[in-house]
Length: 195
Image 1: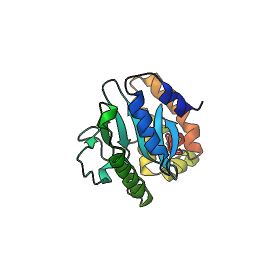
Image 2 (image 1 turned 120 degrees about the vertical axis):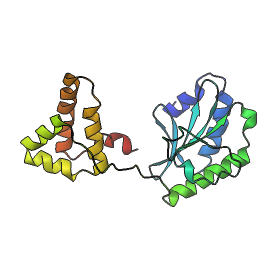
Image 3 (image 1 turned 180 degrees about the vertical axis):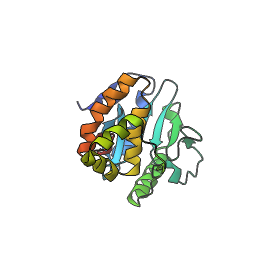
Image 4 (image 1 turned 30 degrees about the vertical axis):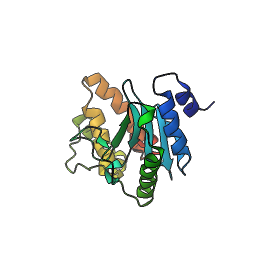
């Protein structure tokens, strides 16, 4: 039994509902994977949608759902004001699922992904390099070149990683972890982006 099968075999109130959503998703050209502990469906290694189950509801999340036409007005913003692209379609029972409509949304999401409709992460132009990282970069010209060769977005992720540590010892241990990654030109979250 694969990881995805295990997710769908779990016993809970919405087992039948998520099984139906899965059946519809795997009936398309999407590929099934488990990411962040839940089933995610991809095309060309790009995340298109996921199936989720919570205590009081279950449903679909569309990674770039902001581009869906949503003729039925069923999509919700995950976090108003924060979430730019993702949209959720929630159900509270299997009876609420209209397979024909769900398929229309799935197919539109697939087409949108093929067209490359995606919200690009905002790049903060004025990334402030934390003092600890700045000192390390100043000590090695090679390291500094590697860091400056990263995209502004990846530079920002490293800066935030150091800056978000509350204690000095945590900042230092984080620095020890990231310096070899910077040396190899790797972004801190690259391992999550490959799937």
